[in-house]
Length: 267
Length: 162
Image 1: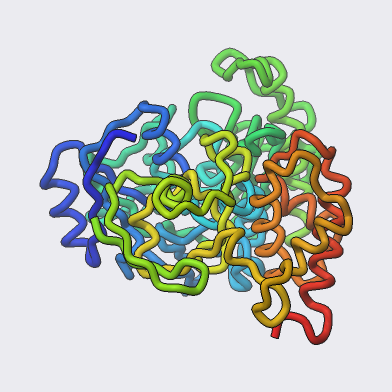
Image 2: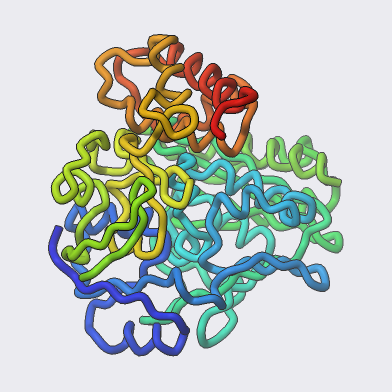
């Protein structure tokens, strides 16, 4: 591998100085995307700044109906957290379905959200649950955060420190996974809070998106049948060797119904 | 860069390039070739080792990330009471013919040990879900699953592992 420097700051202040100090310094969370990317020579950072020793970036807490997950919290920790399993079970089952055990032992929520892979699971939950992205300098609403293919509202050297999820009254996530990578071919997250419904889709297009028609239909009747006839257009969806856009469009409705079914079980 | 960690129960300090992968550190620098590199793209699981007791892919972990941690490789597994005999999981793979060519076996065994440590009595479905990150191109997995179930039972049998 091409050589690079390796830094391990203990504070956010130190981290910012390191990231800003050398051009092409890149933050390292779990490394489950970054390290394969470097190995394939798709990235050649001058320095990696390891975030694993910054205490503020860890922890799971529920206060006043809001679940806060530190950015460096790993998928395995979310999947196994008793608090998350009881308060927001959809997040625990979503995390338990990411990659494989070795990936879940390293990969983090902050890394996944910042990377915004079009087939990643977390962006669907962040958008459906109307989460807030907390960074080292501000807070960003989910609706303003995701900007399409691997793009987010994060500025250069801006780092996610936590994600805050309002605890929903009901919610579910269903995905049709690629059997090889376990990434979502199509994943749909449905959440209900104070009578409002949000439906977010990952995997289908170049970035996570909401479906207003399904949200309106589910607000009238929170049942799988209410959205059975609602189809999304295949026009802007992705086509690849695994699934063409037409098939992905079909899967969106199927997965949305399954997500509603899962959500009804949490009521 | 100086990195200190515990390797198979003994403390080690190495001086390496920060871009060194743990799989390469083990095989090239420390001559521990039991850890295999299959795909080198984090998909096959042949290189799985235990980091702080948890299964990780050593081809997708940088050596500097080991600092202060505890690493266990297939060479570090030991029999009952720390003896030189096979670890109960290795013995189960032997008894159940859980391998053919053997290339994936070190990763399979390390993943299985982590799984059985966390879940002492896994179901067949839990074992299959737990092995999703380990690819075997010979066996069709049937005997591997049988091995893991038997190995988990043996690991937690009374009088073993003191």
